[in-house]
Length: 202
Image (cartoon, rainbow, N blue to C red; front, side, top):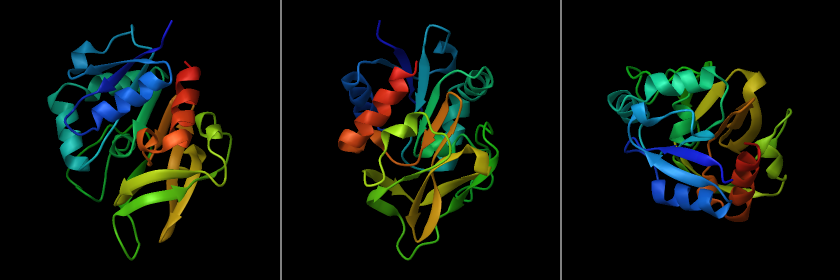
């Protein structure tokens, strides 16, 4: 049986690329645009994201996703956040101090300190700690980034770091909760392996 994965549609994600990437690793992705449609029939959720933290937080609220996503995470069910989707795991971001994210990971989202922002292009991930999904990334592997902000969680969550102007958390894991700042759907074979490992863990 293929894993049924809900891909959250809140007008801030690259949904065609994400769903195709999940299909290529054997999953059955279904786009869901209302929080009330999330139920126990799904094996995992994916929260993609491209754009602005504040817009994402408001759209999640408007579409009724915030409560169900918090409940899903509290029940320790598999959840993958990508780029801004990862950032929305946090309650606050310097990008929009008045907006409130999900608050399921302690810490904040901060602006990158680099000569040129956004950080756009290929870079490596230094994997550390006891990763599960991030075991798919080797030291010389390159993944694709597009972002101006980074997550700053409690150190125990960090399983991957990247350097661009500064060293920042580029991947976190806590049980079935996984977040990556890079885009696995745009990261060729490395991204495929990351998604394969996530789907294989379900």
